[in-house]
Image (cartoon, rainbow over all chains, first blue to last red; front, side, top):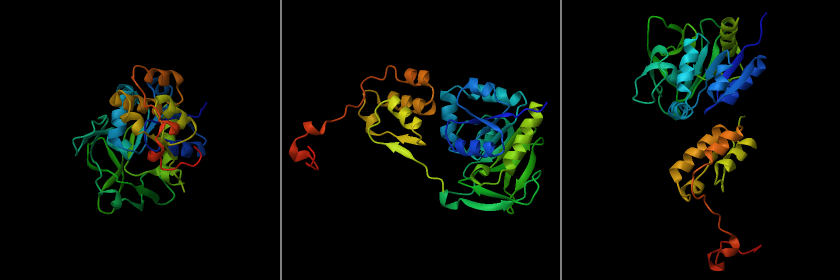
Length: 197
Length: 90
């Protein structure tokens, strides 16, 4: 029998509340995750947008780095948006923060420029039907290199890779939680349903 | 339009910060509450812990231990009248 997957949202910093609200609009069961115990009961985890160095520092203070790594290695779905993408990366162009090194990607922080260079655009997202997705890029990163196991799901006209998937791991450079369009969350929820079945 | 709401002013303890979070703010600014305390670095870390775990009383209590002196407020009645910006109401 199908049950509703419990989708954890890492709630240390950033826009976790917006992720939770979109999940609720899909009748999913979001859970704010601040401790290893809260993570243990989740079927999937979202690392939200925010400030990646702050989030990495808080992950260390609250001893979440190991539990999140184990969570990903257990095959449960993990989705990083913006700062979350930076944290999922194996390596960064910049010297900090220390990422989780889960996805075989090289990520460039603030790749589009400073705050004034933030922008919105429509993108085609492989695996999401119904037309382009409106995407919000805020001091966003991009993926500069992908390993052989990584599938590119979306790229901009200039070639910048902004959405990738590697098995149970999903990363987007933009903020689907900041638009009312629930299709990206529905995509991840389907990953969670398959994994929880 | 989403509006981010921060609380600031007079927050001196981790419990103060957690109370603001429980009242629904998105975050807190703490300045003198940290700088005028006995252990600014330790108190700043404790406030961060209390904000993150604002709904966990045990975590707030734990973060509140061993921080030394907290900022003490200054009563308006104790300030010389020449130092007051306004005298009405006192």
